[in-house]
Length: 275
Image (tube, rainbow, N blue to C red; front, side):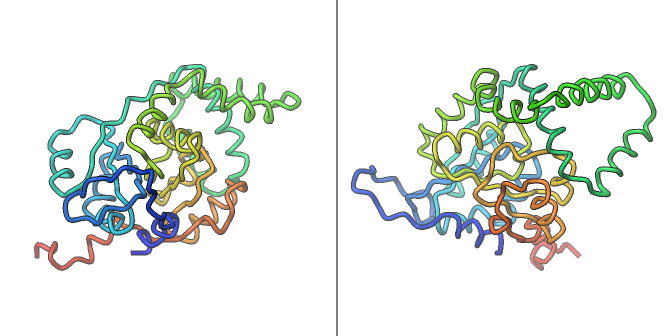
C-alpha cells in the first residue's frame, strides 16, 4: 500500500485535455490520462508488479502500460486478459565504448559509498582466487583509475555521458517507443538493466517522470549508480534510504521514500497458504 501511495503521489492528477484523443477503456480499470510505463525485464519483476497487485493499484490512478523485455506470449496474454496494455520493448544496443565509459562513472560513484558492504564485496571477489576474468577486471579497474586521476577527468567523464548515450546506444529507439505509446512516466524496478536504463534516459529526454523502485535490499550498494536522477526512489528500509542518500547526493532526500518490500506481502495472504 505504501508503495502504491508513493507512486500515486508522484502522478499528480492531470486535467483532461480537449486536444487529447479519447482512450479506450481497458478491462475493468478506470482510464486515467496519465500513462505509466512499467518495464518487466527481470523474472522477479513479474512477481513484484503482478502477483502483489501493484499494477491493479496503479490502475486506480493511472493507465499502466507494461513493457515486456522478452518475448513471452503467455505472460502478455495474461496481462491483456487482466485489462493491461502490453508493449514489447526494443532490445538494448550498447557499444563497448559506452560500457567502458559507464564503468568509469561507476568508479566515481563507488567513491561515495565507503560502507562495510563495499569491503565485503571486495573480500568476496578475492575469496574465489585469481582467475582470468578477475585478472582482466582488475586490470580494467587500474586503467580506469589512472584515467580518472587526470585533472578534470571526473568532470569531463560526467559531462560526456549524454553525448555518449546518443552516439553509442540505441536510446533513440526507446524515445520513439515512449512517444508512440504516449508515455507520461516510467516506473523501473531494475534501473541497472540495459533496457530500463535506456527507458529512464528516454523519459528524461522527453521531460517525463522517472520513478525507481529498489527491487532488492542489496541493490543500492552492489548495483552501481542510478542512470538518471529519478523524481522518486522507493526503497525497502531506512538503511537503503541512507545508502541512496549518501551515494546519490544529487537526489533530494525528500524524494527517497521507505515503502517496504512489496513482493513479501504475499506471505501475509491467508488465501495463498497451502498448509
